[in-house]
Picture 1 (tube, rainbow, N blue to C red):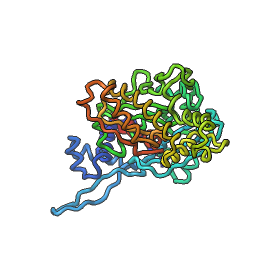
Picture 2 (picture 1 turned 90 degrees about the vertical axis):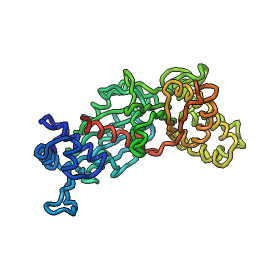
Picture 3 (picture 1 turned 135 degrees about the vertical axis):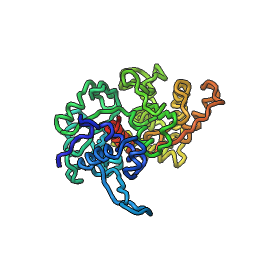
Picture 4 (picture 1 turned 90 degrees about the horizontal axis):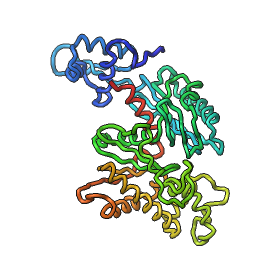
Length: 402
């Protein structure tokens, strides 16, 4: 099948996108209902709908009516009319997902990277696994709206990774490297797209002012406000992880000393536990974490288990994480005035209640005019799928943007 892109240059493409957007957001409806919503004449709408049908983007079925005469034709988006691929590049693994035209996940796959996450190796493994996924799902390459690739780091609008401290990458032309191996258009995102995954799961968040705090391999934030993502002049908005909280603290991957990321990220907590365990022989972590265990996420998982079992040493680390993050969260509240805070990432997810309590306890002393603020603090719902879901939603939003 030779698919014509949705954003083709012929006249009427804006109305094509409007029709698709309405059907996606409001569900199936008749052509008459669409005409009313768009203010289009019946003949114009019929012409545009015919084009969308020919592209395989709409499905039609006969509706029901108590009136005499022809039954209405009900239009809806063809979920398999187009597809989106979402990718997360993590220091330990690749997570890839295929999504239909409604943004629903069809399949996901996690691929271990081992110790070698050089750009060339990562791109090679990514291309091979995406092609295998398409073949397994019988998806033709020309039906792919786009590939959304996300990672922790600074990314230019041209898809070049200026720096990723978690991956150890600098000045990597990631978009070009992937495009050399795969035909569909590629967009590279930072971690800000995670909040789109939350909005996709809870549409009411779209009208909120959301501060999304992520503590995992890195530490960062995203702000959703006034129905849009805030990105800043250079796309580096939300780098809370690189606020220096202890000038004498450990060196961060960015080169500074004592960044928040170097204090409470997954790798930082894992390193701390490995170094301190000999001084805490009474902790059950001594038995849970063998010397050969090196992956930060696995070590943090064992710490979370010990924490659930009442381990005192594990609890002391929890308290350190909660108090340290709460200090910076209070600064962010003063700056951005959110009404919702979402806690995410495998570190924060291990102790969300304690982090929420620490933030609330900080507010009377660290937040201006705290009594008028009504902030909901919740845990992220999208879990380990946040980046691939967010990337796919970002690609879909861009495709339907008028």
